[in-house]
Image 1 (cartoon, helix red, strand yellow):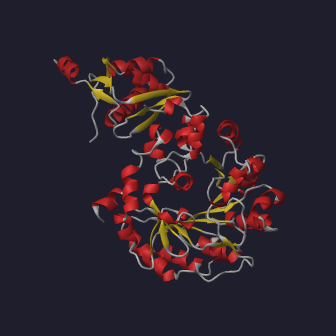
Image 2 (tube, chains in turn blue, brown):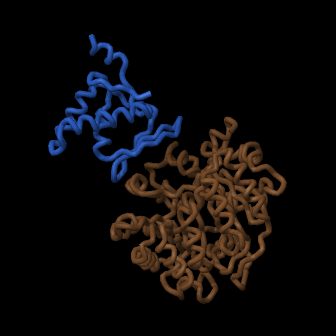
Image 3 (cartoon, rainbow over the protein chains, first blue to last red):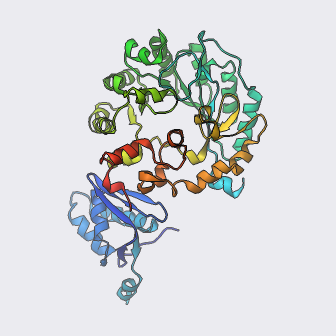
Length: 104
Length: 361
């Protein structure tokens, strides 16, 4: 099922996944499922911002600032799609508690 | 389809149509008998048994058949078989030395479901190619066959077997592929199986350091020189750069979705059953291929073991879920164990050049 990501969702890296940085980017590996995802340098920056204390809106704004040559709407959509992939592959999780608090 | 067949569809059959060849390649892992005349031969197994096995295998997922050998065009009935495969919507790939192709054959192939024909060229000159293939005149014949193929709509590939003596031919072969508008160049380091073992005994194989250096040169320089040809250096995924893994086609074996049928009808993991008879699981003359696929203990064990019970560096590699230990046939041939690590990755690890970022535990 496709996850609908909201701007006020808080994201956290899955602690059991393995993150390995290399020359041209990095990859994420889940030893339980064998899931493997290759990420480029922008993907690395996005993944590293998923530390539990930033929302989707925070992350997209921070990244978009560094790519001003790309239309803001487009880059924000790309980042959201990338984050959705990370969540579906269980490399990143939505933080339920903060998520609920923020809604209030 | 049973639940097991859905989890592990038999997507591809490697059909070793004959155990004879009109060339005498000094590196061949199948070790076929030499057929001096180059003329078509009577087959060991009647085509009706092959057709039956193919129809049966369609019910458990078969979509592609690779025709190889020996030299597959030595078989009298290869075109009839290709017509049969086409009429059953099976994609056909062919590996050939190219020397027996002619206009009539290529025309028939062009009207069939043949997706790609791979022609072996180990050197970019008569001297270089024929020093390995051991039959005079085979270089020009292979080029002529390739030229006919490139005029058709069929996908084409040059396959090069690499050893110490033909490194300088890589770029020249890429030039030939580019000039002739061949789709891709696949470079396979010679393996220590079948006749290839002699290259290792005589230290004509390439060290892991040299292989990695060639890989880097291909990725960073040679591939950029050509717009239209895909150059694939066939080393395990764990030894390739991240950029290459993400941007180019990888040739991974998919051992859990293939089976081999040898020239005598024996069912084996792949062509390895020709030399390692322990890996023969039945024969299409007497056994139902679907039953072998679903129930043979060797395949059941393989499904259970790959990748989680791989040993050595393959067991520690992050890419094991995808690469499945590279070539299990060579692992078995070298160690008698289908779970042992692939020799190139093992050599890389022992030499300290296996990428640390790809290791777990």
